[in-house]
Amino acid sequence: MSIWDGANALVTGAGSGIGLALSESMVARGANVWLTDINEADVEAAAQRLGPTAHAAVLDVRDAVAVRESVERIAKDQARLDLLFNNAGIGGGGEAHTLSVEHYDRIIDINVRGVTNGVAAAYPLMVEQRRGHIINTASAAGLLPAPLLTPYTMTKHAIVGLSKALRFEAANFGVNVSALCPTAVETPILDGKGPDDLPKVWVPNLRSYLERIGGPPMPVSEFATYALGEIERNRDVIVAPASARAAALLYRWVPWLVESRINRALTAELQNRT
Image 1 (cartoon, rainbow, N blue to C red):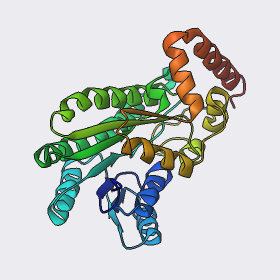
Image 2: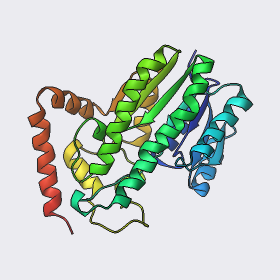
Image 3: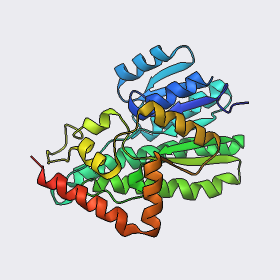
């Protein structure tokens, strides 16, 4: 039997992008999915489109109390929570010397604390259940250096570290932990410039920059399908596409090959800055 059929899953950042694609794929496989997002209009429209086994809720992952209440509500109403996808996140880039404390604080609050709030809420429940799976969206930038994306890279390394360490403890209670580590995926984040209310700095063109490093963006539906297959196999770190897996392996054994490509992309982006 598929692990998705009848499963109860909560997904943060599910109004668009990877979170929405994962939700759609799980619904198609028979799961009951609670889509949450800070953007009410997006998440409600998404859940309505996905049908009766998709449910929408507004959630700011920076709010630990709200995250805990969302997790506990599902666990109580459904008798269990099977899967938590800590997916909500933002990009953050620019030359490091131009970034302020506010830039770092915002990305830490969402990309790191948003995940730890989810873990703190769901993991004890899953330990009590003796079952469950926590999936944290990191990035290939959590395995490789990504200059001009230093704050983002920092947060994604943190999520990979959290996931790999927690996985050892969780296994003793029948709970699984995985980290998703894609390179560029075709989502709105590729064309974003960061939060509007932070001090304005020059940011790289993420689409062209990441294409130089890792090739064309992976279609989001293709990534979601691959990710769910690897989650079903209980993989620890899920890297996609194949070129990203190759880069991660090369960086381990012959790092200078990967670093030279990153340096070329960095030089080109700085030369083309506007």
